[in-house]
Length: 198
Image (tube, rainbow, N blue to C red; front, top):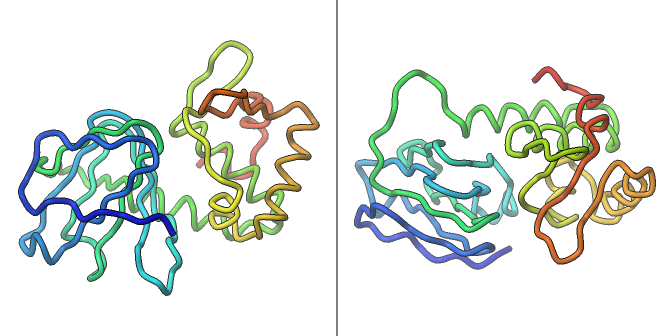
């Protein structure tokens, strides 16, 4: 698991994190709760508990909020997938939409698909639809996940995940540009995914 540092108990307007850095949001430091809001970049939210081995709960992008009063007793970790800036003193918005709950639901739906191939296909499409963008003939996802992390998300081993990704690359439906931090997916891969309407 990636080592992390605890986020200060003092509210901050802008916490800046480089790619790969992780902070722990410890509810014991803020017993009254607080709310962080992503200002720039993209992040992965995961559980730091030993029992769950870093289980991914959600991904966050600009405008998304994470309420610390809804965390488990051991807290929650936020990992920068791209250069990340967030506020740790955001005012919670109403409206009933909670990005963490929404992501958790979508990831749970993917985990219940019948085969590892379907789960990988659905995960890649979900990530691109929610966090990527169309760039010419490709859809770009602005960050990469390790094969081990993808395996965790779809309930497969790293070896199985690597084999399936190689197959998609050989079919020229996925590119991993060298020297770049993004993934490129063919639009037909995204559009044909299971759970595409999700």
